[in-house]
Length: 206
Image (cartoon, rainbow, N blue to C red):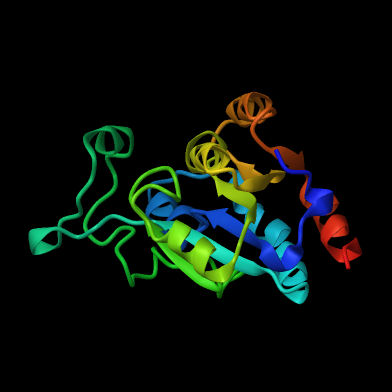
């Protein structure tokens, strides 16, 4: 793991995972199904100051957004395991260009948006191309869920020798004990900071 104190912030991006209306907005897919958690709802307001601070230092904000690709007739392509886990997902949910697919207003707009079809923001996406093209070598990562998209993305970044900071209270899961266990398991993969600690670091770095 590279030491964040030595990072060049102009080569750093904040990367959020799945902070979209279909997950967080009351009228989104999860809200309509009564699925949600207070810890998840609190994330955008906690993370937004980091995006502003990093941009002021020449860095970037990338939003990775879960996507259900519409198939013939508009029915979404949903993997069997996800359909079993979330049977309420239906036509129009997480569809590109839809209200539910969009980044929540508190964080909008991102500098780059990456559509993803699985947990990791690296899997079959254009994220690596963006990082190379913009000279981004380090990532500050938050979003949902801690044990799913966040953990998978952090592990994939680690395999690629990309330095990372995980926002310990800038990510959340539907169960607090799962979030805590994931933080522990990722201790050897990524640096961890609270959002307040990360903000102080960003604002104090020349």
